[in-house]
Length: 106
Ligand code: FES
Image (tube, rainbow, N blue to C red; front, side, top):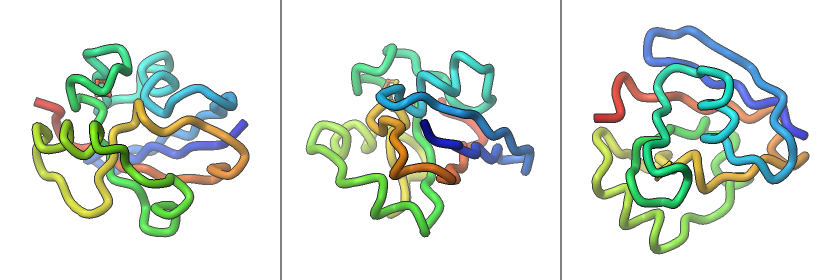
């Protein structure tokens, strides 16, 4: 399990306990975290789960797959810390991670 803090574009924060193997997108959608849509259900096919990973956690989040990198091309405001939340699975390694959600996913 990992405590994941989601910080919205307006500064509002929400911390969830996310079970191992559950994606940061799934946890966010299930708990009504604003700013993450997850339109494709986690199939890396929509880019509506775009988040910015806090710099301290970028390495722990692991490397992007080629498919994730390609899909991020469809997201707005992509930066070096951009990831798709459906491609990051919770584990103890990520306990304490902070991610920021964009103002909009569309
Ligand atoms: S939920 Fe569609 S790409 Fe992540």
